[in-house]
Length: 417
Image (cartoon, rainbow, N blue to C red; front, side, top):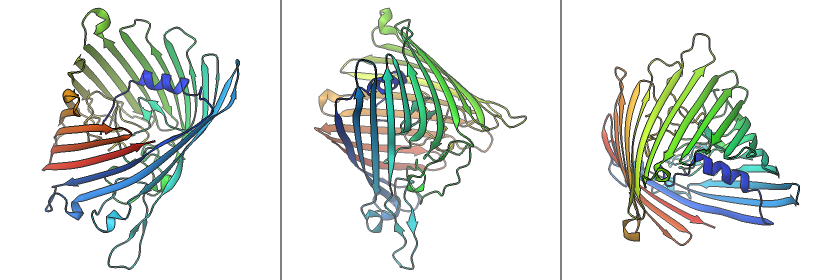
């Protein structure tokens, strides 16, 4: 699911400036997500073909020290995930993987637990153009990031340093020790929750070692040539794999071609196991926007054949087979498809404000798995979203053509405060 796309550079710049907080601020959101499908022998709105979940996220940030030399701040976040008891009457499945199950002998079935956990707890210091942040936090880097599309979001226990002393350049260094995502590279020892529509987080929101013994990442983002933003990242998931990500995005408006954008991406990941072969992927994109009318983009990606891991360009913080990717060709709903070995994908996105009535999005992806016996995927998604003050409402229709042709209807309600 994709509502808003923010460039990685913008996200990092926000991260490095958001520490100059005035006093104490409290913010958060309350969410209710619902899905129903006609897959299988049941039909839309049947209990066994439907899932739902609700969550509340509360965040607090505050200044600890703020003077002409240094600014020190801290923040904390808390999540409560609940079905509101809907699984006992209107639906049979949940969205979040953080739920656990309490078995019993009742003919009505087991109880789904209501997990709650601290998703953030960090302290940060800024001196000049350097910011250091330590603790439990969200991250946004190409191959290790917080996924925010579901009812729950994964976070990390990490140390991050961001520096912007060089003109038009952002330098990033990070160590990630733990995470509560469903990552599979290191083989988490934690239990999985019940069957969930959109699982991202370990049962109970619990944190486990990232990979086998943590991971290191360094990144450089440069905008010296104003129409072009280039970035390069290197990752070492200790005792598991090494990876890198290269990306360049050109806004041709600065060259006299208003509305035109071009992009290129390349990523490579290689297991440290003896004799392992690398998995790599490249992607290209062209986009065009007419302000207040529409925006459209067309992209293509290709993953090599024979890599030892079997996926390339995926978020290493969640399970490889269902992990989201920052590749241009990412599908709207069926994650883990465009990153599979020996796969070519084409993606088209068209969005429009529809005369200010609502925000319309149309997303089509054609995924060609070339390996023998693999099942291709065609996914068409149409979204309609509208904000009513602090309330965001989105209705979604998804058609998935793979082993079977299935339709999905989703509704999202988010109250921001």
